[in-house]
Image 1 (tube, helix red, strand yellow):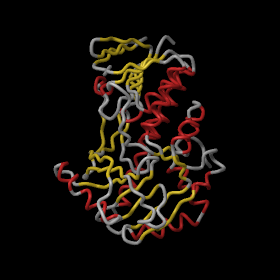
Image 2 (spheres, helix red, strand yellow):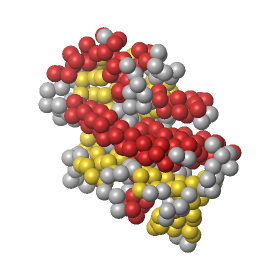
Image 3 (tube, helix red, strand yellow):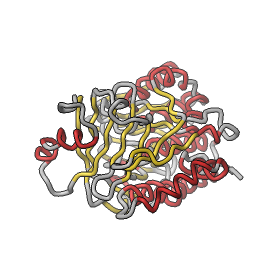
Image 4 (cartoon, one colour):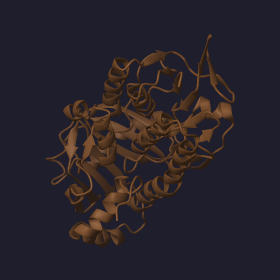
Length: 378
């Protein structure tokens, strides 16, 4: 194989590039930005993703930067803790029966460093503008430059220029509310007794998610779809004090508001072009499935390319679309529906029973952590 092009230097694109470079394939990554993205929407790494990063020999560096979460909690906005799920029930299924809390912006420099050590190159300021897909090669045109490879992996995000250039439909739904994510320099443990590193909080009026990362507490809040961003950011301090009140406004490092979609590309392969990550499928962030399933796309597609087997490549692209459609989408959407349920108490007994039954907890966690999407877990 002469060369593989990768569009996008996020965690998905860099993972694919590193896997290929370690297999001896020349790789060129074309990144639209002038540097690696600093924003960190994704911050949870699931067990099978940790296994893949271990195979790529980057896991130790991620663990040194992250927090190990062996449990996660469901809470009621007014009543406190409901139940905690202990991931140790997965100890027979994975060497990493935990989640790692770490911003994706801490992983990408690690991947970039290892990619360069293996001879891969990353070119910044090279947004793909057009593609020419031939029987035996792909040509990508950026501003002033043209690149040719045997294959191209489009990992250039939800607004993928690669997907648009190929005219691949990206169908699904847009959620009725926007999501507001705030990173806070606060110590929430004394204010919310029993809080864990990962917390899903039920409330029919204003559900939320509280996640600890190495640098901050991150709060995810639903936000009306049709109000000005400035107005929502202005009322953020009061909303945060309604969650936990330290007697003053929270110290906010940064906050952002964005629309959330559930969409899947009509196909993940178009001739010699493959789609991965958000370029292929997007979902709400609840459960931390987006980046993780994208990294799984990257590893699966890279393995099929290294096998140099067209049937294996078709099978990998088809399987990854099936996972997005029948595993990731119902899991993430189901969590959203439960958190905002008009009768959240109806789910409390279910969660308590789940936490009390190791067999049921394992079955649930195999799916929630994406293990069952990758292998037989009977």
